[in-house]
Figure 1 (tube, one colour):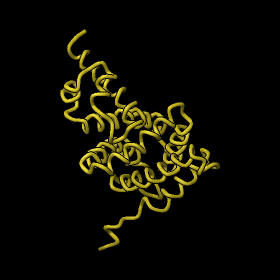
Figure 2: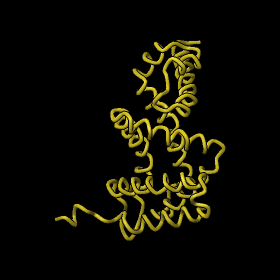
Figure 3: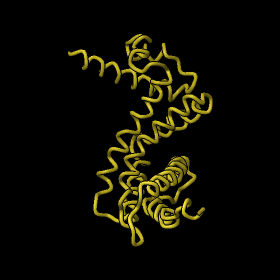
Figure 4: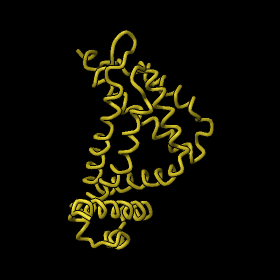
Length: 207
């Protein structure tokens, strides 16, 4: 095994261990337990991630990255904006029924609690999420809509709004708070949101 392979193996082991411990203990998660579960030392955590917060941020990115990278396959080129939003909404809703959906929701809520306890961690998590969301911004940018095309600024505003919508609905589905929120519900709601706000240019209106 090469040094690079060993490093990646250790990184993966720490992320897997962190998922278990952080999901259970939140901000009280202990580095020594995480390292022990990975059959490594706490020194490996600092070497690979810099700090406990660095490990938590990497954990969040590790969970989000596959999701955002798969969006390009779920939302093909050639669709207009509302069709793309529809496809994305349905893709998101299917994820609510995935085998790991509950564990993902548990981690999501845990990370929010950790961010509220630690503003520095919260800022780093927010930056990481925005970085991952660039996939979605790029996916919406340039799509035809209402006689024009979506600008990067409009795509960013839409992405922020869709995240808020789907995070809320995504939490409501497993908790029984959105019993009728099937794929069509997600798609119709997302289409309505996109139709109503994406081309509003607040800067132009202010002038």
